[in-house]
Length: 381
Image (tube, rainbow, N blue to C red; front, side, top):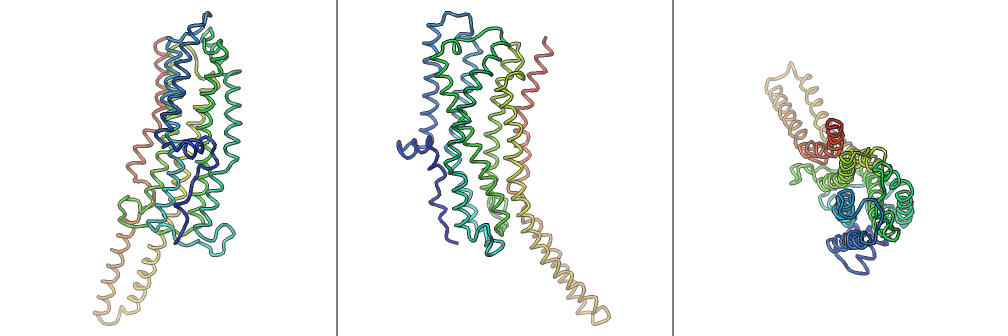
């Protein structure tokens, strides 16, 4: 099956990624350090300058409420987010290549389908959906809106909880700097989410529109679909990172005596984490699971039908010679053994069960830590 998988580039219509990859020829690691470094210099370098000229009574540069949240948000959080942002397009293409190279993807389920007629046709549709110009426009508008929301709603609510303002809000030119860094962070996160939703949708279509062939004893232990499972876990881990940021911000506010659940921005982070984690983890797993289960059941049904035919033929010869009955019994035993081997060797999930259990525990840690900080805060009052 000849395709154009190797020519897929799912970042051509993303202006930020296109600028760094195509114009500057930066590698993924260079982009991560460049954007994070610029944000760190802007927030901490210019923040020091802004603090020096600040004469108000608000939160200052050296106070934990400033540098702890800024380090979490604009250094560690941005570094991880940008890392996933530059990795995601290539990772989606890698899954498509892997499914093709391992022979998992077979012919279209219904020849002449109104959806797709071939795998290259499917790839064309996926590229148009994932790498659409409208996603960059939507992400830009959303990021701008969220920055305005942060400046006009979220930050004033936060300062009212602490009972005082902060230098990065009162020094207006530095507020613009902080909001620009915030804009990049939100844009990157939103682009990741939009592309991931489209990828999940088309992976779901993939298992609906195409027959698949499970590869027993494949080194990935999941019948050749390990690349999909790996992408799903890493994507969910990124979302867990958003939950971790929300947990850190919540803990800082709790221990400072404020209630983070009254902060709109933190509520947005918690909502993103709680809603997106099951969507990014369960939806692609279930679509692949259904297709893998159907492929295995087809193999098992073939054996079952042969077993039933042999059993029926043996019933006809029950008064015949003993040799025919013996051969029928041996064949029945052989078919039963084959059935058990096929049932055990063809997996029905694109990720080993032990990894899924371990990740499920990891994914719940931000929520548990957020609850723990609340409990500790109330217990120590």
